[in-house]
Image (cartoon, rainbow, N blue to C red; front, side):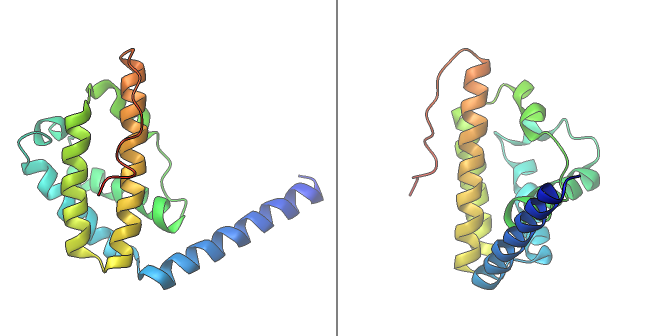
Amino acid sequence: MSDRLKTEREAAAARRNLLTQDAIERTGINEEMIEELVTRFYGRVREDALLGPVFAIVQNWDEHLAKLRDFWSSVVLMSGRYHGSPMRAHLPLSLVGGHFDRWLDLFEQTAREVCPPAAAALFIDKARRIADSFEMASATVAGRIAAPRHVLRS
């Protein structure tokens, strides 16, 4: 690796650490909060009339929840623990707008219950962006065009 590339990577890591530290200080998000949010949220998802059947394909919930904790840790704390392809895993599920709306309803409700306001706002912003990305990708695969509609949701 060249010295320039090494220096650029170190600078990027330092910026990432500063951003993460700022997010932690502003929101109070930590791994325990992520665990509580993920556990409570996916408990609701599993019991939900619309989403429960979609998630019924999960064989090992302990393993899946660990993966989801890693995902959210990577999203909000930039931990880099998640190494998967969430879009690839969700595209075959034939999800439509109502699935994304319900997923967000449950997620936002849970985030507001589990997290202080600043943390809930950060989680919700990320979740809305994720829902928009997944919904647009699902539409594209189905030969449709979808615009982002969750980011500005009130």
